[in-house]
Image (cartoon, rainbow, N blue to C red; front, side):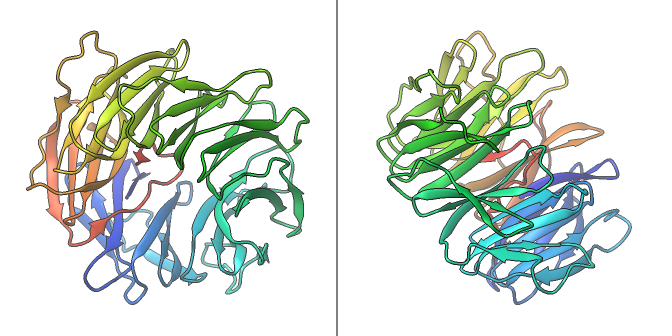
Length: 419
């Protein structure tokens, strides 16, 4: 699930898997719930992920049969156009980015290695480039920098390597080799023309580098005791936070000389998700959610902590705002529990709850979008429903059975986080 704006209208895109194993995507009007369009893509299997190219108003949909690009601009008045289908059906990871000329590109990782595609109508039948065919890539991330040649960071087995997207050559192997398979990558620009890249593996190790130059002070930054489930940048890229099955949240500072910090939590259960709440003129707030449903938040400056227990397993985490810009955390999971937590409140009373209009189910995905009526929150569940609320009033706008199990990840640039 993802949300994007088309001609000042928020459009919610939902994809998943139904009984016919179709790769269909449904577009809904955010403020009314009106079904705008049904993007039918029969015979291509379950949807794996949706990314948005927001400038072009394209949706890039990865499914079992390959990758499809849809032009959904002005979708209220005209039928969306499927521009093309490309790639293969074994995509393990996908990333969208722009080259120095502003051309949108899609990078995919599969059993055929890394391939770069032009998702537009005039895109070639074959990839623009292909490389790293001998690598078992588990994650990819575009590295932003001032250099004219875009790079991709590719996680493979216990290593992370850098590749040129134009010469198709490996430009370096990052010096710290992981002890386990790398499972997560996260990037954040430094503001000085370089990028911090963080990687975490399934044995709990976290490493941070500064790119494009790999500084000699780059080092192993510590480890969790078990698998890392989430990795995010906080404080404008000055730090990274990681969450693990070992029940801890750790904060890492890329600058040399700073040790990692374990953020204390009341629960020691596996931490499934992380989200970052940003408000004007305030420090970033880091929020974690664990398996039994405990939420914890920290003001990154000073690491002031706060805790709450919503009493149910958390499967999705998002941040929303009211009309005054005040921030809240939305946690969703089993039993159709969808809870809004005011982490700025002085008291630790009961969290504010959105009424869920269905029997107990599993909420799998959250998305946030802006409209002329204010901010909207959308939830997709395992019974094939999508429900939308106005976040400032908690008023339910609509709920619709769409017949598919919504489980697509949000696209870059949107606020939601998926646990």
